[in-house]
Amino acid sequence: MNPCGNDKEKKAIRLLLVDDEKGYLDVLSNRLSRRLIHPVKAYSGTQAIQILRKQDFDVVVLDLKMEDMDGIEVLKVIKRMVPDLPVILLTGHGSQTAAKEGILAGAFDFLTKPCELVELMEKIKEAHEHHQKLAENFNLLDVDKD
Image 1 (cartoon, rainbow, N blue to C red):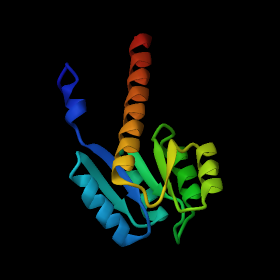
Image 2: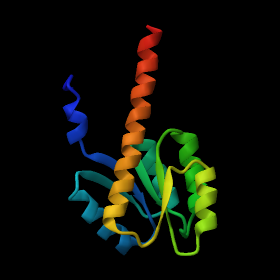
Image 3: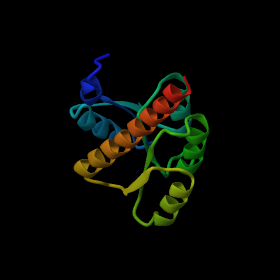
Image 4: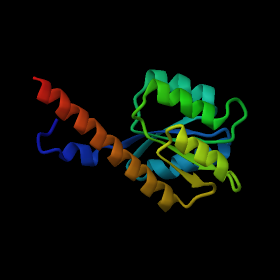
């Protein structure tokens, strides 16, 4: 690890993408992977939880409306598993109430689907920076205990 911290800036963001619309998810994943993001796709809430048990992520992008599990249910499970992991919700038009419920359940933020790639990238980077600052603060607290 580089003591100057430059490795953090160049490291790809580990992103869990969760959406049951396979075509949409595949295209989005492909576009994000060209922008210093390492996306892992989950085509259902159940699959997302299984993946999260095996891998660490910096950010999750989660669709609210899915066949197997509601996005709010998945969000609540994620928050129990990894409380500080930022989750960005994707909502369809007219799902503002559900998005607000998601924020109350611990989501980092939400975007209306379909969203512009630039807007999604900005939100992912913002969530990642927030996650890194939290991790650094916890590391400083651990150092102070020594």
